[in-house]
Image 1 (cartoon, rainbow, N blue to C red):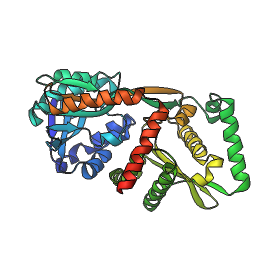
Image 2: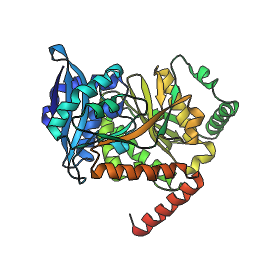
Image 3: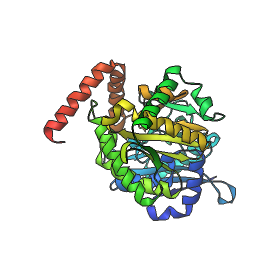
Image 4: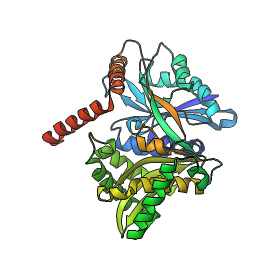
Length: 378
C-alpha cells in the first residue's frame, strides 16, 4: 500500500472520480467529494485539505480519509471531516471491510503531515465500528479517545418490501391515519406532489423548504441548526451538485397550487436518506408533513432502495416509520494533555447531563435560550 496526503484543493482532481464512486457505493452523501468541497468552501474558512489517499498495487485507489486541516484556529492543531456539525455519520471512504486497514495505513502519513500533536475531530461515527479505535492506536504518539454520549439514528429496512408490505409492518392507527388524512385532503383540495427536476427548480424549491422549515419551527422550542445561515449556504452549494449526479431528492407537496410541505434528502447508492423537511402550520390538521414523509418512503421503495435512513434524532415521528436503529457517537482523538481533550471531556459530562434530563425540562431550556437570542436580535 502507498499513501498520499493531498493538501491543495487544485490537486484533488485526479482522485475525484474514484472518490465519488467509493462514497456512492456506501450510500453516504456526507463522504462525497461534492459535500467535501461545499463544506470546505462554506464552513471552513482558511482551512486546507488533508485528504489521505491509500492506493493498492497498480496505483488503484483503495480508500480515502477526506479531512480538512483547520490549523490552530481553535487554539490547538486540528483536522476533521468537513461539516461534522451538519452531517450524521462519517467513516473512511472505501469498502466497509477495509475501514480498519485504511485507518491503520494512513495514520502514520497523516501524522507526519499535520504533526503528532494534532487532534482529530471525527464527527459522529458508528458506535460499533473499529476503524476510529484503530486510527487512535496507529497514530504515532499517544492519543486519547473522547466519545460523546451515543445518539440514535433510525432507519427503515426497505429491501424485499413493496408499499403494501411495508404498511403491513405499521400499526393499524398509522395505516388508518395515512388513508384518512390523504383522502380528506384530496377531497377538499387539489393536491400534487412533485420532485425538483431542473437546476432552477432546485434552488427555488430549496428556498421554499427554508421558508416552510422556519414556519414549522416558529411553534417549537429552541432553534433548528437548519436555520443557520452557514447551513443554508452549504446546501445551496451541495444540492445543485447532488442534483447533477442524480442523488438529490427534493419534494414539494402542493395544495391548491401552493407549497404546503417540502422534503429534502438524497438517494445515494442503495440508500434513501431524509435530511430535513418543513411544512405550513396552516395545514397541520391534514398532517401534510406526515403525508409527504410517507410519500417519500413509497418513492424509496419504488426506486428499489435497500434502506431509508432517517438520520440522527429520536423524534416520535421517526419512530412511527422506523423499523430499526443504529447508534452513533461523536468522537475526538486528542493528545492526553491538550486543550481539545479537556474541552471534549467537559462537553461529554455536560451532554450526559442533558441527555439524562427529562424532555419537558430540555424544552423549557430551549425556549429560554430562544427568548434570550430573540431579545438580543441574534
